[in-house]
Length: 169
Image (tube, rainbow, N blue to C red):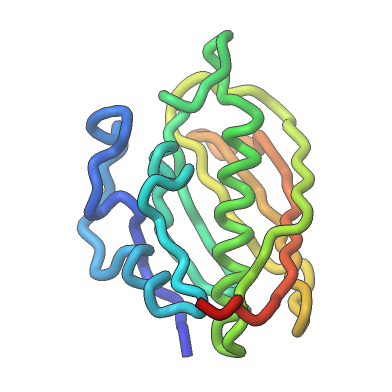
């Protein structure tokens, strides 16, 4: 059974945009290692997670926390891109749903993402926290709150995933 673990996506990879502006502490296990043991063996090479510099700092079915630098994830006016916030929200919600589904041998497939952007941010680090709204046998829904370095809420999101058996290889 999977339990809460400390994870870091970038622990064994260079950040696509150069050195990650917010290097994290050494961690005992990467998301890559965790995902390798899950049904369907999802992979991270070349994924959006890797390209956006998203670091997962805590993961369990009850709570996933990840950070993302604003630098490299902005729109033309220098503000954090709304799509970057949505991608971060879907990342933490889907990872949490995956951890909820895994003990039953299921995989999580995102079906709905809703995001409301409350305020802009043009520098620093944003943090996303996913917590369950509803955890069932066939559907998992997570609420995601994204905050800036000062703790101000910049985005509220909801991520819904279907829980299904993985396709045969």
